[in-house]
Every structure is written in structure tokens, then in C-alpha cells.
Image (cartoon, rainbow, N blue to C red; front, side, top):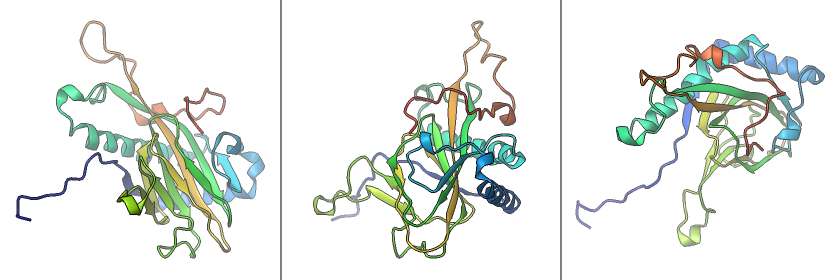
Length: 244
């Protein structure tokens, strides 16, 4: 083949990966230890979730480090994802996702504690964005096996005989790593073997278009100006449709 020949990768799926600051990681790890030592003090989230895990506990904004996590890392990460993806579209194709025309709001944060044999089947979330943050990983979870890894699934089943490659991407959980992805992105976690517990935080965020001022002077003045004003982690609110 000559130099003009190329292979195109079509229809990308965007996953944001970042890192927790060490002080915030330490605070969240301490919170996880406290919650799991007294699980009865935090609402059980397992009935609303797909995971078959030992513990899944809701965390709310009453925890200072959850407030910091949402305002300083999660919401900015979702904003980074939006700008990376949407700014690559022509201006007339960006819909409501231009700066000042929407706001980001936290709707859920919960703690997952996975023991040997626990797993999370392939599933999606409601809202706009979801993500995971790794707090503790047993040493036997490594790249030599799929055990305990985070798997992102493509639109079709992986099938090497018919060249359907790239339909499953495994991510090794590393303490302090943060992943943010669209809520519709299917993902799963296979079980692992051996001692120890795999701790992670998961979250959901919704991107809400804000109404345009009828006078045509821009967005409504009611749009929140600060990320912290967008925190809403009430356990009594109605969940977005499709949350598993």
C-alpha cells in the first residue's frame, strides 16, 4: 500500500481520567473507613444499584470531603469532558452545551465495598455523567487478569473471529484514579479472588440546560454561579429515569 492509505478510527467514545489530590484522597479514605465501620449510619444504596457487592452506602453533602470532591474535582471534570467533546463540533451543532447555557448538578455519590466473589454486571446509569474513584485496591488485582478491573463495553459484543475487536476495554483500578464518562456508557466490574476489599466511590451528575431570557439577553439570572450551589444529594428526590 502507498503512503496515501490510512485506517480511520470511527465513532470514538470519550472517557476522562484524572487523579485525586493526595490530601483529598486521604480524607475520602478516612471517611470510607468510618462509614464501613458503622454502616448503619449511612443509607444502604444497594436496592437501587445493579452491583452485587458486600456494601454500597450513600454519601451526602453533610460530609465536608464530599462537598470538596464534588465542587473541586467531579463537576470540573464533567465540564472538562463537555468542552473537550462539544468544542470539536461546529458552533451550530453544539446544542445547549455552550458556556453559560447549562449547569452541572450532583445527584448521587455512594461508596462501594467489593469483596472476593462480588461483581457489578454490565449496566448504565441515569443522568448525564457517571464516574468512579478508586480508594483501595487489593494487590492481587493486576494486569495479568481481568479480575476486579473496570470494563467499558462497546456497542457490540467482542468477537475476534469476525474482527469485532475493541468492544471491551479493561482499566486497571489504581488508588486515586478518577474516571468520568457519559451515563449511557455500559460498564462492569468482574469478581476477584483472594483477601482484601476493593473500595471505590461512584457518582452521577446531570447537565441541565438553563432557559434563555425571553428578552434575548442571555441565560436566566437564576442559573447558579458556583459549583457548590449545584450540590443536591437528597435520598428522597426522584431518580432520573433509567438509573439502575
